[in-house]
Image (cartoon, rainbow, N blue to C red; front, side):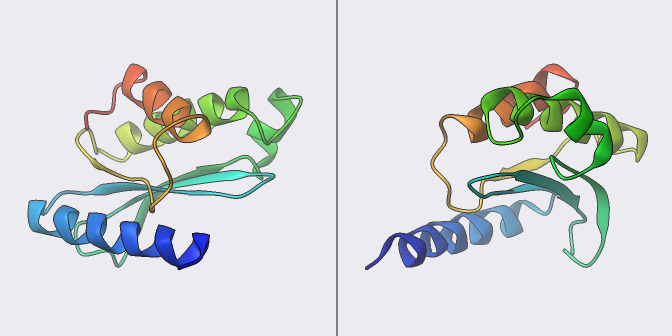
Length: 117
């Protein structure tokens, strides 16, 4: 099994557990250059809030879009947008990525900014 299929298998298992909770989910996607975050509704059909290092507001404040500092900015931004949309409690969907580095930094920043998960 290669890296990608192992990650997707972890993601599928995690999403099945989140679906049983019936709560909005904070999902992330990490690439080598950027990190993306979305808050999706319970049914998964609509996006309630989104933030990424591609956006001009975040891209202008960080020197490099592929490090922990950029992930912290995305975490703060997604928490602010989610709270503005009326969402305070979410389930963290890490999309099969291991919980360390940029993924952990984004989650910690979102928690500090007010999201509960």
